[in-house]
Image 1 (tube, one colour):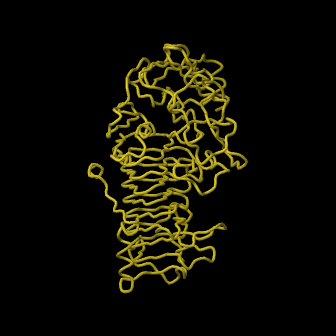
Image 2: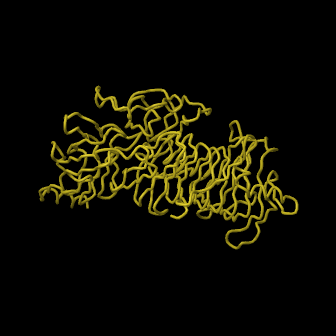
Image 3: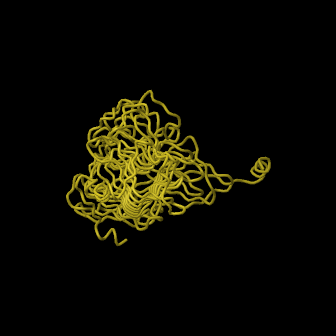
Length: 509
């Protein structure tokens, strides 16, 4: 096959490829948060040199530049330094003053270093995330400008060097000049008081990206804003902080997909950050979708996925804050699946990962949820005595494949430990759980709550054989523990007095 390809290319002249552009050339009314998409007639490969440049058509000023000679991010763990800088966009133009590009509060004070990798600011709160400037799926190449550099009421033109793409049977000549690919953005942003926003990947909404929409929402607002996300694929890291009362409402659970190939190696914790984060400075950058120091966030009808080729530390969702709700959502992690810190309610949620699928400090209440693990424990609980941990009512725990695991692992993991960790299962169905049920490490176990009531086998519905359960765990009975069962069946008891309620318009979808 290799020889045939060489003979063919030697005998046949290259044709110039034709491709579709999004936004279309000379398009108007384009959202400033748009991605740039080229759809080829065959599958391209990405070059290792060349630039993608965006210019202001009125002034010919360079607004953004993506240099393919800069690697996207680390591929091997490196704990020597934090590869982040304070102003990733400073190389574009010394005269550039768009306030939206300022990183704001650094993520816990990450040490600045050189620009060794691609960097973009997400959520206006960190020192820069590593990212892929171009992602290719089959014949579609999506180009990702740096965040928040394009503005309303502007005309831009795009240049793409010929070395950016290689095609197997045709030649990519690049895009050059003011007329090859130009578009004009919308005259103005949505009304600043708008509480209904629409995200559509095809550009028919108020925003093209989920991040663009949530960036528009003011911090600490008392009135609820609903971001309606139309069916589509949204390949982006979503990170935001200090948002109150925001509903992310997907058009349908299986057709609204938000995800990214992010992980702890690609976007590692800064090494100079301790675990004692201040609110709004949580240092984790490895997640596909993250809400930090947020209150009243509702996620409804969507799929959130951390996409990686092999198991990695990379949750699909991270929630930090209080009074947050996740309803009718699928969460897939390429390692862990969910990290939940602060009061949160989960209903009709499916979690799939490779172990430690539920991390966090709690309290968290799960109802009618399904937890699927490929080989590791279903959770690693980190709550202290200050609040409850994880409570599961009418949930399913199962393994993918023939391996068996434990419901949770504890306690010290060779570190400080969580001697008050709590996991309570009420009326849950189990499959692939080892006879001891619970993994235990360390000696500080007297205050641990590993409680089960009416656990049954998923396959046949029969009561589980609890005779070999770990001795620190406890099988609750209605005769002796009616009050405990009643209390832990009540979300408000677990969630610090908060009674979770989802607004009617979300439930109607």
